[in-house]
Image 1 (cartoon, rainbow, N blue to C red):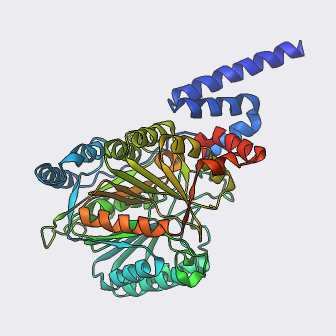
Image 2 (image 1 turned 90 degrees about the vertical axis):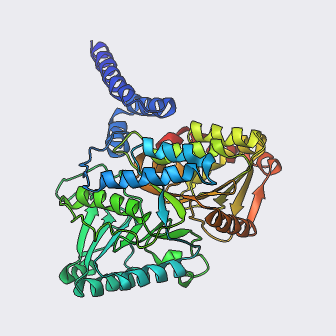
Length: 470
């Protein structure tokens, strides 16, 4: 009797779970992984699914009054690109537009930073020069030396009458306590938390939906994005173990797209509209000659623009494809694209850290390397310290700098931003940085893989099973 009841309840549970999971229409691997977890570990599985499962975030969307103008400007820039030297990348630009993002816009200047000291100095200088507003959005903001210095710079600007708004992630910046934030608010700085988790009030939101974006916009004319958070770990002052990372500074109309992403996130976090006028989107003072397309993506949309852009860029590459990422857990589409690029005799190279900050991710990443090496790709481990850069060098005239890693979390769960640089000069700078990084790398070979012990190989294979959930 009891066996029949338990069996019936289990079958009912399996049926209900199957309907819910299948209707999510995720990849087959992710769907099967969640089905198995929920079927055979119902209590734990349900809790984990509620915390990090593949449910889409319902997000209030701000329809900016400038959106039509931005798209019109973007289409004009795209038309100009079609008649220029970057013709082969027009289809890539259209992928982002079709996914709901702005097209390429003109930049007066592009500056690439390869270390935290120079990036933070540039951000502080831009903040000091701001006269109307300063907007910042960061995943991690530590109350350390650079975090405090940046806070004090914002306080000074706010006291000078500049509107200062900052978004910090509810998980990544949880080290910011009341003592640190009180002087900001007292000076008039508006602080908003992205998706906070507040257990004390039983207000538990999906903690895995994070803003992984790093955005700074000053007066709508100067913008920054890239891999660096606000933390001493990115600067040499941290010591020999400081992170190797890449960041970007833009001026001109291309900053509009960074501004748009910030304003949408601000509306979501603060639940109030930021003033939108010519001071927010100031008319460019010069006609920039360098094309940049800013893409945003997140779980509030199934378009996943950054994933599609990477997939397209990999498939369009004909000469070289040099990638740097701290977390390499590709889905099937990206993996096959990389393998087929290598088989097409594209010079495919990948830099990953020798040791990352997640043992599970490191094991999963190594499970994909044999397939890449077999296809002719080359994989390198960065030796000195953790490499946190997320960049791509595609042929001679496309570079990518952003916040997204080559993993499922960045492509589908985090709110990310990526800058597609349709620019030969920026491409050369990224290529030089890549070759310089290679000097601190050790290349992995088939012999290295053959020497791996049984338990290492078993660990890698096991970690790969859960890679759709990472």
